[in-house]
Each structure stands twice: as C-alpha cells, then as structure tokens.
Length: 425
Image (cartoon, rainbow, N blue to C red; front, side, top):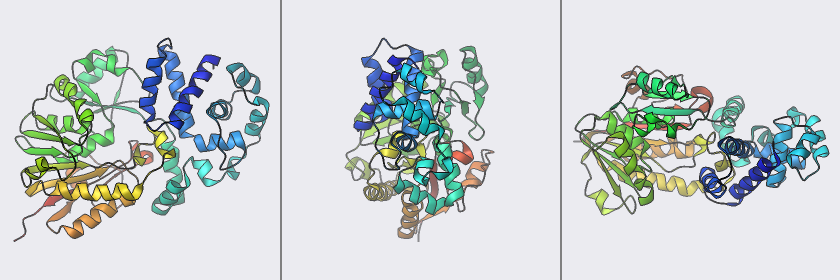
C-alpha cells in the first residue's frame, strides 16, 4: 500500500469511528473532499476501511494485546495490513505506519487463534454475541459471524416492466460486468465483485435497481395483485416500493409512507427511471398521523419493513456493530408501527412484518405479541407463498416466518411474517 492510501484510509476510518453517520455516507463525503483520488485508489481505501470495521475487535486485540484494548485508526489499518494481508514489518513501515511495525509483525506471527476470546475471534461486541449464542448456539453463531465478516455480494433486481433477466444480464456483460442469476429471487442478478453499475446504460435506462436478494423476497411475500391498494409503510428510499409497483404491472396504487421527506425525495427519480406511475409518496409525522388514520381498512396489502438494529446487514454496514443501540426503544417503536399499520388492512387483506435484524426481540417477540393481541390476524406459511413462485429455500428455523441468514442463504439477514386479516363475526 502506498503511503497516501495508508494515510487516507486512516483518516477516513477515524472519521467513521468518531462520527454518527453511516460509514457509506462518511465515505461519500470524504471522496468528494478528495477529488484527486482515482477510482482504483478509492476502492483500496474503501475496502481497507470496511475490513477494519468488520474485523475491528480482532485488530484491536492484535494492536494492543488485550481483549478490551482501544487502538487508533492508524494502528487498526496497520494491524489489518499485517494480520490479514501478511505485510512484513519493513513493508508496513514503507506504507506509512508510524507505530512499532516490528513489534506488531511479531505479535501477528505468534498469535494463536485458538486462544482468542470468543468476541475477539468472531469480531462481535459482547452484547450481540450473547444474544446470538442464546438463539443459534455456538456452532451456528460461529458460521453466522464468519459470514457477517465477509463482504456482501452485489445484487440487482431487474425491472420486469422493461426487460427480462436474460436481457439485463446481456446488457451488463456488454458493459464488462457479467452477473449470474440469484438462486432464489426470479428477478435477481448477482456479482461477487463490486462494480460501477450506476454508470451503465442499462441502469440509466431503468432496467434494474441495486437490491439485496433477501430484500427482493420480502416483496414477494406481499404478493400484490393488479389494481389493488398496497402500502409500503416504512418506505425509506423506496427499494421495495419500486418492486411492489412493478409486480402490480404499474396498475392500482402503492402508497409509500415514511417519516423522512428526504428519504422519499430519493424515490422520485427512481420512479421516473423505472417508468412507474402508480406510486404515491406520503410524508407522515408518525404512525398516528391523520393521513394514515383516514385510510384505515382500505388496503389489500401492507408491508411493514420496520426500523430495526440492522444486525442482518453487517456484511455491508459493519459500523453498526460498534454503535450503541437502544434495543428497548427500537422494539417499542416496532410494536407501535405494526399495530398502526394493521389498522390499514381490510378484512381478507395481508399484512407483512419484516426487519433486517437477527434478533428474536425484534422479530418473533414482536409478531407473537401482536398476534396474541389481534385474533383477527393469522400467520401464513412462507413456504406456501414462495412455492407459488417456484422458490424453495433451505430450512432456516421452524414456523411460518421467513428467516434468511447470510451463512445459509448468502443474503442479508431478514425476518418476515405474512399475516391475513380475517373477518370476526
């Protein structure tokens, strides 16, 4: 690594660790402020920073020699180069390391992985490790943690209104970015390497959107039909909204609700590019907003992709691991949102609750309590819904819910439960 790249990676990593904004946003700002960095250099810097975030606890142990040590950004980058890439002390010094490169290299050589504390070996904070161990057991947690510490694949969802999967694959291959069909989603393509897909002709023409395969499956659980009224209750920037609208063949109405006008603003150009005109974006104050209450009992389908801890997305957002999470407050919000969204569903309609969390507190506990309090809602079997699309998933737990795990399905971690509202006489 060149000294300039070492310095830049350390600067960017320090900004991410000290800031509160997501790592990808911090990176965008840093690269805008340093326009002379080339595309390849930016890739090296970004991947170095993401590696340090994924493996932070191991790298801090390597740099400090203690399980609870706190290393500087410079030391974390140096530890990554020595401990994960195998650089020698001399090469590390030449790269710009200002610490004791010889001592660090010696510590890396003498490290016995079998003697590492569990949290260090798996690169998980203790609070998360304890919960995962309780839910999945030691062996499954080890496999899950290993998958979470790997970079995510680059998945795209084709826009079925404009092209077939084969046509988009051919377009990407022509641009120099070949992709393979995803194993489960019938609308997905996957690359194992990053690529500037947003600069391709097929993206500018609205033939695809970047979307994890697991996220694509959530919309399939909604099973929207033409001419129906559908709500995406926590729409964000609208990735699932776009898929729902396309599944409805641009007919009916899809309401995209969110408390953030800025997030919904990002949906507008995506709708235009996709050629969709059946979406209404609605900014609300909260789940009790009068604009929501006026629509109670009107919707055929409602998707609640609730705000959550994001623990299922650690492959692509590893900085989440090291930030404080108020789990109790999140769960309270999830319960309130689900109860409010349920009132929108007409008898015979469907409600889908989903999170990108691995934690039972945000998933089964929320839906179990909801079902106990709402006897007019009954769970539907995920396997039956997906079978109608000829999709068969490897087993990942029991019960009717969808449970996607990175080490089993090679997607982000997701939980979802589809429920039908039945009329009670």
